[in-house]
Image (tube, rainbow, N blue to C red):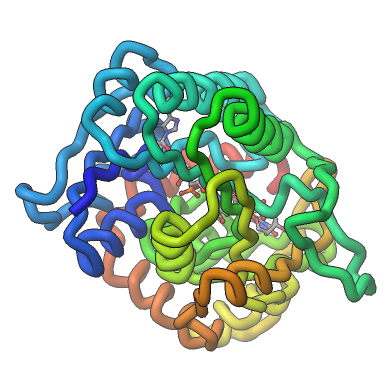
Length: 332
Ligand code: NAD
Ligand code: TDX
């Protein structure tokens, strides 16, 4: 049994990870989460009280972080400001949480000798052309495009420096786009599903040709547990499940699955600096650590996700109107 501190555990991927850990291990989990607009305690409903503790707080609060790391065997660091569109509107919280917050955790891990796993994104590598056969690997140079991805890139580099200069026992994973339950309605797939449920037409940025490499959040969780157990200190692992799809195809799949004509969507103002394509080569994780994704059928995973949003309107409805008002103010 290990004592895990999971930052950002009330968010989308963090909460999926907490459920996964409780189901598949005997670890104890403490979640540290600030409960920003993106955090939702309802995502952690039903967890056994003897295995799970929730602490509301900021990862940039050095005293609190120091106290929590003193009692943890490992930190899995998900907490972040995570939405590109918000980072274009107001970058400051991205610097505070993604850079200063990560720095604060690393300093505590250094003092306490705590194992550290840093959760990051493929967006640190910038984007690929649509006709480029290449995919990102652990050796791809960093080239982030947005305030969000640049702060994630900065946080990755901090982790690498704390490994090299101070001997912090850290690993990093960079994952592709996640989908599944508990994802905030500001993000692409939940926005379009809940739009259809509300009788609003899905909104596609620009021409909709941009490609994302989709992975189910539960596969991300199993990969992170694998790295925590078997990963080599100081190493970076890319996580992906060979799920490349263009945005237009995803919207068409959502519409037809929900009984609507496949072309019943609107093209709206494109995102500034919109990355064209992400694609992950996860050979290192698969061959060196033996990880495999379980969700290999995107359409089946998407159908289950649609069902989840249908059944869980009380979870997403409180955020929906505010998110749509924000997008409307941007012509999106
Ligand atoms: P999310 O926005 O759904 O959740 C973030 C969580 O962090 C929320 O619960 C929020 O309350 C919490 N948080 C924010 N600032 C905090 C602070 N200062 N202190 C404590 N808690 C704070 O994000 P997500 O989509 O679940 O992403 C989680 C992590 O995974 C992020 O690090 C993100 O960069 C990374 N990631 C996401 C994806 C994706 O597809 N969503 C892909 C690859 C990597
Ligand atoms: O309404 C929309 N219409 C649309 O066409 C929205 C919200 C998005 N899009 C497009 C933009 C992207 O090409 O869909 C794609 C996915 O958009 P997001 O869900 O905002 O994700 P993305 O910007 O790709 O970033 C996500 O994956 C990598 C996560 O939000 C990041 O946290 C993660 O690092």
